[in-house]
Amino acid sequence: MQRADKHEFVKDLNSVLKNTEFLMVAHYKGLTVSEISNLRIQIKAANSNFKVTKNTLTKRAIKDTNFEILDKLFVGPTSLAYSDDPVSTSKVMVDFAKDNENLKILGGAMGDKELSVDEIKQLASLPSMDSLRAKIIGLLCAPQRNIVLALQGTQSNILRLLNANFKN
Image (cartoon, rainbow, N blue to C red; front, side):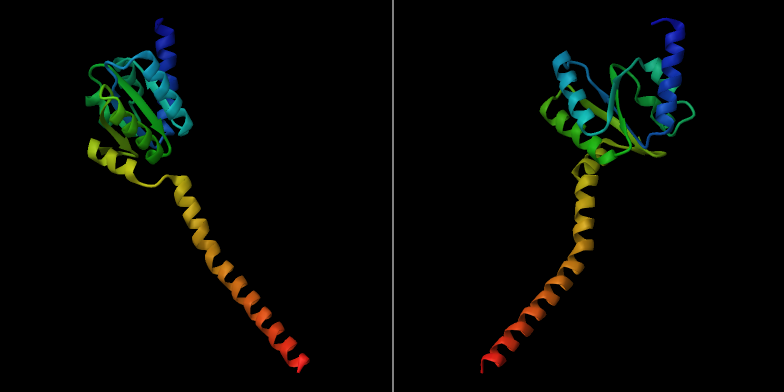
């Protein structure tokens, strides 16, 4: 990488991270290219991003962002997973780490709060945003559905009563 390319990379990553809510750092030493490719596909499906970068460039890129507190984690072969949905990103990374012992989650940050590995695992155990949205919509629709069913039931009971009275 030329010096100008490095400067551009740092600038681009910095601007992306300034607008990102969640960043996770992991060691990937020992993963094969196909395993990393598989992880990238899973991360992308979760609307997240995954990068393997040089530590020196990443340390420069996290300057003036909420993720400066993670500076100490960038030692050895590190990778970044980042997105605005911490739950889905955590789920993918934690599940992948369970299946592949070579991926070791080091920590992360959400907003300006540093997260430990245990906190990331707790995030991974939460329901996804899509699941929560579906539950909220279901809760909002339930009273309306109950009212409609009650009104329909009342109308049909009235009709049965009227039909029974007219036959007599």
